Image (cartoon, rainbow, N blue to C red; front, side):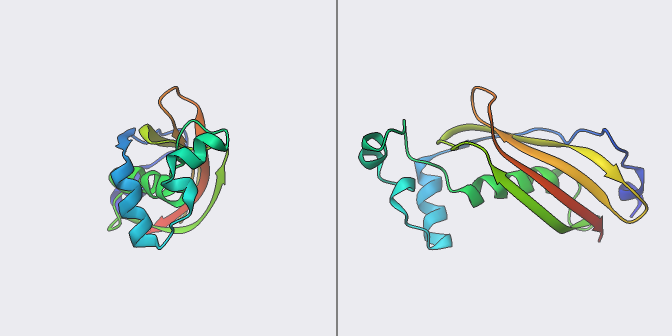
Amino acid sequence: MERFDRILPGEQLPLLHIAITREDLVRYAGGADDYVRQHWDHPFMIESGFPDVVVHGWLTFAHMCRAVEAWLPPDEARIAGFSVRYRAPTYPGSLSCGGTVVARDRETIMLDLWAKDAVGATTTAAEMKLVPA
């Protein structure tokens, strides 16, 4: 719990930069049993007015969780709660995930998290509560 105790409001999580590919979408669809056309059917999405297929929302949030885990591993903290808001579609390509410690007390750390696309637009935002492991 040593590191958990040293974290202060205002601390920034290190950025996690990833590239989401169509292959990632296929793998995620298989694991999540989520085969909705918006995640794989490019012609359908173009006809629907979108520039590309859309990344699964939970896959985007999973990468946001990876950013948290890389910063504060599970042997030091665990997720006690979260809420996620999908603000705009996330498309395959570059994604950056990060966040800020917004509050803390002896037993909890509150985070504001985000995922941004290649042009820096926030596609997904989340709040997360961490407690000591």
